[in-house]
Image (cartoon, rainbow, N blue to C red; front, side, top):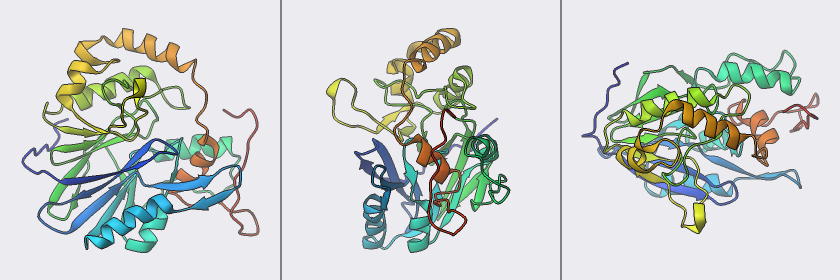
Length: 293
C-alpha cells in the first residue's frame, strides 16, 4: 500500500515518561494551530492496594491547558499489557475522540473468553470512538495523519504517522532495545518482523517515537530515533537481518520472559477503552483468572 507520507509537516512532540511502567505518552501538536492529539496516556494504579489515581494523566492535562491547546484525538497504538489507559479520564476533562486499530475486536474476543466476560461486554469495538484500518487517514488541526497496520506484538497494533513523526507503539524499541515480545495471545514473531519492515520502509529521516524504553545497559531513558538509525543499528532487525533469524531469536527470547506485572488489570481496562469494569452492583472490580495466560 502507498501511504500518504508528508515529511514537510513537522508536528511539535512533547513526551511524558512514566517511570512506574516505563511508558512514554505524547502530546502531538499541529505547528500551524492549537490542535493536538494525545498518544498512549497512562492511568496510575497501586495494584496491591487496589487504588487508581491520575497523576500522570493530570500532567498531560495541565500541559494542554497551560498551552491553550485543543485536544482532538486520544490515540491508543494497541491494547497495552503493561499499563492502564487514561483515555476516558482525559476525554472527560478535555474532549477528543478515542481511537484504536479495528482489530481490537480480535483482542476483545480473545480476552473476553479469558476473563469470562458475559454478553454485556461488547466485542465490536464500540467502546471506542474510531476504529482505524490500514491506511486510514484522519486530521489533527491542519495536519493529516494516517495509520499503518503493524501486528505481531498484538493483533491490533497500529503505527500512527503524523507528518515526519511516527508513533510505533511496541512494534519497535530504541536501536539498543531491539523489539517487543510476540508471545501474547494473537502475537507472532514472523508477523512482527513483517510489520517492522513496513516501518523501516518509511523515509530514513522519519522521526520514530517509542511507547517504552528500559534504559538498556544503564543508559538514560530515550524515546526518539529515526528510521535510518533503526535500519543501521537495531540489534534485532538492523543491517538487514533475515526473517528466519529474527523469528528464532524472538521465539527463544520470549520463552524466558515473565508476564508483565500489570497484564491482568491492563487487559481488562484497555480492551474497554480505559474504562474500569464493574460488578453486578456497579462497583469498580477487576478479576484475577487463574492459569489463564
